Length: 295
Image (tube, rainbow, N blue to C red):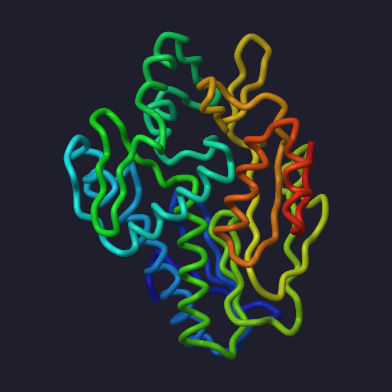
């Protein structure tokens, strides 16, 4: 058994866990067959690590880092990257330009934690000049990323990996219900006759649930700033940034949880709701989808 993948028997089958994408990841599988459960979990681990290796901006050898390093030139892109860019355009349009994968220059200025400091207004103003999805030129197999701009798939990569892993399990193990959980981004593999009960974390009492959501299929995602924020002169700044100003969104909920047809769409909607700030509730109500907002 791989040292990076742990497996334990449960009352419903097996639970596997591993670390990837800066998160604790789990796979719940309703099978008593330990070897089968391990094979399923290992497939999830491999697919998650593949996507992390390819699209992490923190990995200097990733495909994404290569695209950013060669900004200023036309570059070839594969089918998978092209599809992610198309989805990113949908995020950008639906959010009125607030959900933007070109936010890299401004994201690099902000650190969140006990020892973090506020960036200067001048540095924010300079960085915003190099942000804007509309400045990209995208063709089916080519991308032009202007000089001094960069891409960051951090807002969609984990949700995408979750859906991909669940899809592989559904393809190869269609009769075994499983739940893929990548740091709170969740997708169902195969249809579960008995619903999965997923807890919604209470922002005022972390690691405790304020409610549950039943899942038989599809995905679930939560966006929030209960764990990543900055305190400066008594004011709390969440980590979700308003790209019109370069500063954290004002009036955002503590968290937004969304249930959707897949994890990628759930993640997109929960993030956009956070970006809407005080209008989060109205935005989610217009989507005709299950959601839970904590303030």
